[in-house]
Image (cartoon, rainbow, N blue to C red; front, side, top):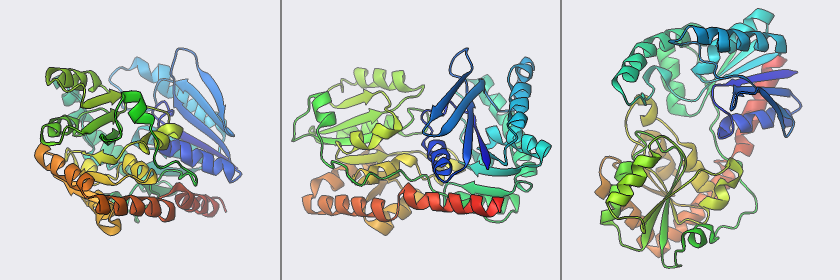
Length: 387
């Protein structure tokens, strides 16, 4: 049985798509992933049994420039049809339209994997014209999603809150929830010196780590500001990539905080837990910029837990549930730097409580929040779909 996944990004840092593709391949399916081009040359790669193709620059059908339909959309559609797969698995709305109509053309099944709540997704555009374009595009995206979502064979999503929103908004059966938990290493050195050696920090220094996109509404400006309310031995390390990176570097330099806050380049998914386990605390200060963000369950939160890190996170429903059910950290108001600092200090200052939070994080990641459990849902879904 052949599965074609379509994702409108470069695939390299999309841990969810990677894990799903590898799990299906391991279960015996032939898996082909269509992703964005990274260079002028169309490339094909093999990744642990998964074939990766990059024929075009993008798969989203909503375009301002008509010539892009001839450059991307029509060639992508023809390539997808020619795959003659049994299942087309679309990751997010940007990939759904092409995957759905390619599947219909050959009588194949369609799985829609919604990573966020698209009718109320976050608008990242910075300039007025792009914001205006985004405002016009959102209702069209909702119309397309609404038309297709009731016609696909299976819908899956990333957490319970978004499953409920999709079901209510589009009046469809509740989607299957497959969380984007990490693959938990059975053997991991929980205390290593990677970050301390790289940044020339002492054993007395405490590291509050942020992993993820360096973009708007991730709360990183407030995370930087919270340093003024923290003891000097607490350092903040930001690891990731995004268009706000230089702005944050300038902010750190202007505030003379280069010896207290560090920004490092993103690492490959397989290196994340080794890096994270050299920190003392994981932070996720995501802001309430949209319904999609408010109900999010960031991947990095689960990677912190898999690395046995206590977490300091925004006081939003999905993250509060993780903290309260498992006693693995504390929540804060992401709009208040002082409250962020209070939470960080409270976690790091009580040795006994901190040790218990670490033990809880280690335990819950291995017993509950791990991909080895989630992939079983995915495999069962496919078995039912293709039988």
